[in-house]
Amino acid sequence: MYWKQSDSEDVERIEALHGGVGTVMARRFFESESRLPVRVFVWELPAGAAWGVHSHPDDEAQEEILYCLSGHGTAEADGEDIPVGPGEALLLAQGSVHGFRNDGPAPLKLLLVLGRPTDP
Image (tube, helix red, strand yellow):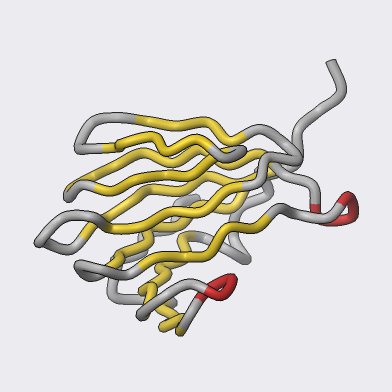
């Protein structure tokens, strides 16, 4: 058995995410079909858009992997600015205070994988 999904399905427009600026286009993949303990998204931020700095409370604790598909942006993680471009990945640990902004002139596309970390 298999499922196939295009990036034009299950799209949500999110305004001022976490107190940020502009609109984030969030595309979910296999939200109800997958039994993996992760969620998979492609997020697109137009030039100048950002999602605000935030953390996840203990009951929503998760790690996030961001992989830049196209465009250029800056992640803020625990007070540090980290430039991110195509082909680069960033792992945000559980409890990290983080946000992201599109610094470039073109749309920024990120693949996001989110899930609860396991105990070591």
